[in-house]
Length: 201
Image: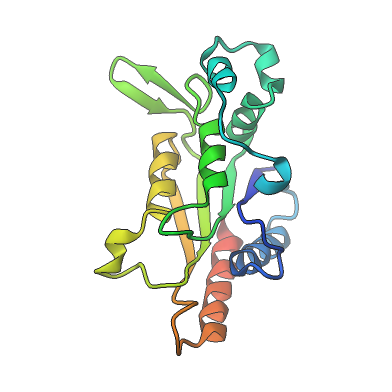
């Protein structure tokens, strides 16, 4: 039995967020094809994720003990470590990820838990795990010249790779705010892609 961590980074409802419409469909299909897997939903807004304080940083860099697993910040890093698969539902905001997702990444990118330092530098500790990023965007960011502006999916793929997650896929619904685009068709295509990836994820 695998453990999937479903991370949601949008204050909108499941019905009003186009990212969540796709991600919820992904999870629905995933459940059908992986009925024995455990799915943990982590809504970052409901969790009250905040920016790190000086005290939080001190705790993160302190020696890890058994009590660390219950620390109000470090518990998220241990939860991330224990999962086998990750689904990130995060739209593009102003060319990047929502700030609350960056704050969460600061919670989980912890030396000694999700990566470590060696004589050769940093080494990820999440080898063999996989992730999918589900993202809606208003514009077109897959092709030049605007692909150079895309810093949301690129960052998430990079930071997860830093932690050792090399199996990374992306499901994107693009051009949703461009005048004249067939939004229903774009969403339908993204939902079908989500179905296919969910089956084998």
